[in-house]
Length: 336
Image 1: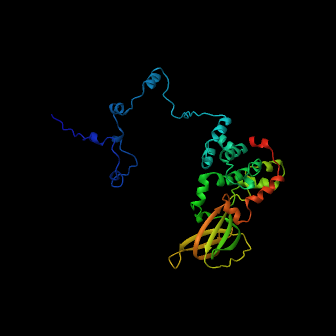
Image 2: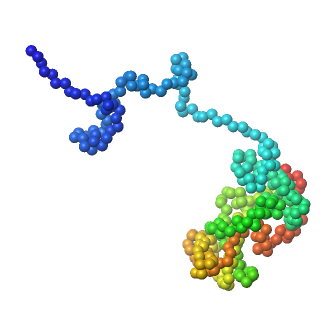
């Protein structure tokens, strides 16, 4: 007697390893939060095919009873630690515009840049007797450590041709750099039938930064360290915003500390010149007043290292040489 047996058809091998679709969950008659058991069954032959071949060294280690390569071991990094004297020799060939890049190489290069020997060598590399320099930038006045960095930087705008050309190329016209600076003083003067308004601004120092520590050292004056501070510079972070216009404008006096909140440059009504709006705010960022200059003939920004900056504030470099007799000097400080 023949028996009829019903055999449940199995799914095809094409479903093995397939990705679940939305129909397996959203349109399924029965709730299921896991993948089907059929897709999780993989034969031993498929596992052998999917296994990646190991290298010869790894196979020998495993065959000898050792373990495979450790995956969580830290990578081995090799580097060379050169003596600081070598970096001093390299620093003799650094151009003035590459000083920042050189200082960021490592801690030893940063230490080289912070030494008086580096700035003295940089000054000697570009000193030229045929160029007339103010008395402050003469070799006899450059033996002082105090303020040596700022003196060398300012002297390079007389001695170094790329810096001299930078002053005549008009690259100091980016007036948006003054945003966020504190307003110190303001004045105006008559120039060639126009009026030029000058605003002396200063950037705030970050706590713990090198200029902030130098300013604190100069205020305390409790040791000889302030006499050897090569970063001493009263004009560090200062700029002068110069706006030239055709009309005289009265600038009011303010009783609180103001900051440049924003500066807006648009076209004037004549469509031939510009209109400058200088927005001033307090330390909280609240907008206090707007200074409108319309029309504007010229806008420029002078940094502390340019010679024109000290001509505007009435402190030329020739007057600074008078301080050389009252400050301590020592030739041996060049190597510090």
